[in-house]
Length: 218
Image 1: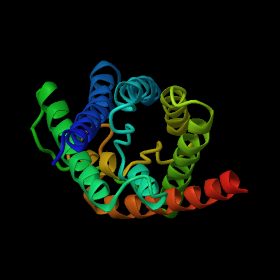
Image 2: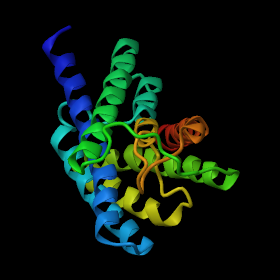
Image 3: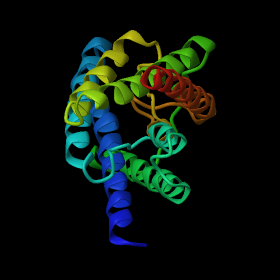
């Protein structure tokens, strides 16, 4: 494995790890500080949007800062990733995400691995994940035509908005969804609902890609 691909994979691992730590850790901190659901969601939103922006700025010049199999899938289908890169990206994103949830649980003195019990089910919730991921992909594909450096804040702002306009609070990421199954805290999701989330996320990503390719190639 050459140095370039190794750098990309390590960037995806570290970025995915920190993204999950930010999402899960900020939710735990907010729960520790307040019992008010509005306060908790607001704190979780601000931390996630800000942290995601910075992570993209750090790693976009290294790996493209995907941290998300749905994003990597779109790049693969658009022939911007080779099949081996695509598969390795997903593997390292998953490892990074699982490491992130373990570290978040550990930092706050919780069991290293928990099984979430929070129910997040229903067609309305799954539709929200389709819409959230659709919006994320059109944000990335649209904004990068304007400026690469603008992708970070654009994605951070979109995900922050998604926390509030979707009933699912905008997971929009299969790796983050999987990792959140291993923390029984504010951001957790019971494992039985993970697969439907991921299916609708990937569907949303694919439809967004088709639409944006139509716009761009028109």
